[in-house]
Length: 341
Image (cartoon, rainbow, N blue to C red; front, side, top):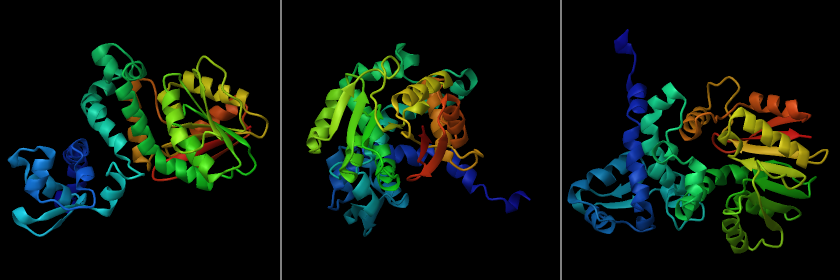
């Protein structure tokens, strides 16, 4: 029987940290950015990235085998180039660069995930708080460079889902939108560009507001996209016809999730819509592996925080008074949970 069963899937998943760290190191070294639209030989890559000779040709050839680089020719004269995908998504000069989330995974998450077993046994976070005594957000907000890296990471992972929301959701019946936990203002910028009739507000902590203002001004949308500063646990939310939260609700335990949902309900008019953009887990909890792994990541980051299914979201929203709940698939593993007041 064992001869007929293929162990390759087990090995691929079990040894998944090998290809993971290879691409994370390539992003950290800015290999894809330095290649740009040109080709480099192995020795040229070593010189440009300041690598030891031993790294060549194994490092770039491994990326070729992983279909993350193309190679023309053989031997030391072979030319390595970006693939179509890495040129679009992993070159920092590209407007749709998503490497920020990989930079953060390399700088923070890779090491923290080494303690997953301890997290599973204790239910305790394994991130900065374990080493410094400071909670994740407290630690991030005390270091502007790390905060900006975190914001870029969230922007990279959110770009596709936010663009899909702007295309798929019918905003025509609404006039105002407030993005709670708006970070760089990315969602407000994308939706405002797609729907010129909307006036948007990006709401986040005071330390984050200057980052959003810079991005909004650079996008030429200061006339229709405003910023507002506050603490969404301590302050009332700005009123709007649509209130959005992108990768926010999963950061908290059930008590705090319910606090936020109630705060949104109170800030919406009758007929208003609450939209969460998350890696919503399928109700049967069998298919959205990324959503389930993201929930494990919330265990590592916060302990009692977790991702959730569409049915979970619907139950919470109905509990506070929302009338109708939909789940709208967006891009990849991400969906929008939509609750109407």
